[in-house]
Image 1 (cartoon, rainbow, N blue to C red):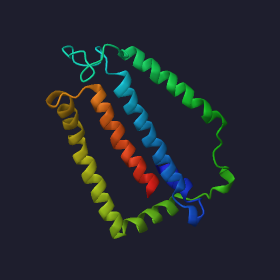
Image 2: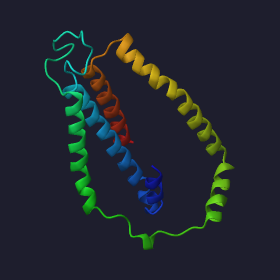
Image 3: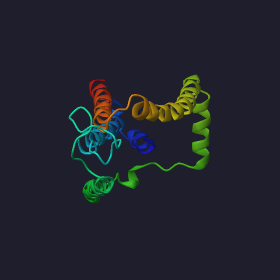
Length: 170
């Protein structure tokens, strides 16, 4: 995100934000892919509860084992790394160089803004609370509601598809 913001400052003012929005779209699309992998490839008997009934609504009779899942992740990472070889970064000679004192003065100016204070309060508050909710979410999903990996994957797909659509629309 920080690198996207830095590159975004080099965008023309009428196009500012395209790099950041594109980066977020890529991020959320890959979250959808991860949800699809969870929903359709990890709903087998080796990745669900041992007493899970084999049926379409519960566990399926086939699915990847944990070792096969990690092998798939390795292959996907290797495939997605190949395009990076041909992608070029921005020419460093076009990026302005700043001193440490410039950064500290910019941070001080930013911190004096009331919006920044509200944003810091939001980030600190939400991060401290979401650390609890993500753990609680796991317990609720898998032990209280007892979602299968298919259902949890569909939840992930629908959540990130809605966020991606919102980014695209707005």
